[in-house]
Length: 501
Image (cartoon, rainbow, N blue to C red; front, side, top):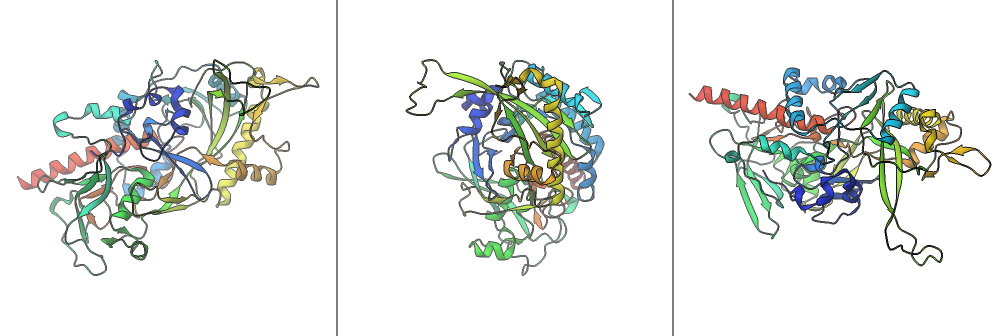
């Protein structure tokens, strides 16, 4: 197992909920556990660079996928739903906990119910319409757990982990050449690990660089059905395929990359779920909380909330505010909506042939009218929550006797029935909820067994294969997928061993 980042224990801010904002804001070019990037849409974003990936830097919410996700991807993947449920359960026994709601999350739960996001489903890990409390990868002591915890279930003798090790490219065999001219190879017996009939290349290992700049190779075992499995995420996996010469022929040639296999959809069909929301400064202290409650509507939007305690920094050379001896802190409470899907399609291309340079990404937020309509419906529902009685205690008294929220940043239009104003608000305030996916979509880049089409001994097993976002938060389904494909691989290996015997 090769991880470009370090161990979670190297970064104390990752261990608790309180370190969430610090992790996302204190970033650098090479070592921070969160790697920042900005899409061509102008939206700031981040991806994980640490053992455990983005599960080690995220807000911790855990909820299983909606059924639409499995129906939408059934054609290429042919899900074994019994194994899907078993795999979710296998993950949940190690890293999932029931959160203890404090003041802000409780108020938002009541507000969602008051806004008629019904029924109230209590605590559940399932994706169900209505208001619910979801799972969390933070335990009752506030300590983070992540996908890296699942490694404790592995057999130590079967696992070697290289940290601060950056994969430069996948090594392909000497027969790997442009598929337009190469003689087709026979599929391997048993079907294990192959790219299917017509595979023209075969992965034999990886080339990676350690922290000191030394290069190493990790090679696939010739016997026993060894493979290379990419789990680098929606940016990293298509980036590595392209750098290895697997992608659109004309594009690779324009970048000076030798073409190993023409696969036109690598880096295409990339999606990000837009997030819009409202933030307030409450008049009373609120507990720090990340996402624990969600309102799942029938109109294609999910409503969530968080409250963060942030430091106050007075402007430099301010005549009235002096830097205090003790830091000052205040609470920012946010209620936000994420649209399902989305339908708007983006893409990825290389910024450089240096793997350490993030690729160039464009998500095309709200390019499809239905996505914008979903945002409008979601923000109107947030307006209902804000007008309800459940959040009254968080309003402040105004000069002329009324009460309202003290907003931070953009406020909702006064006339929320005006489609034009609401659409402009959505476009102007769009940001990310870090749920981007696609780029190696199943049926276009990988087949029903997550094998890269046309390439032997190479699979992609991560969110880059998803055609839509699985429910309110993808991390549950990404971790489930690892277990699911792992069990399938063991079954393939057993069948191959039976044939050989």
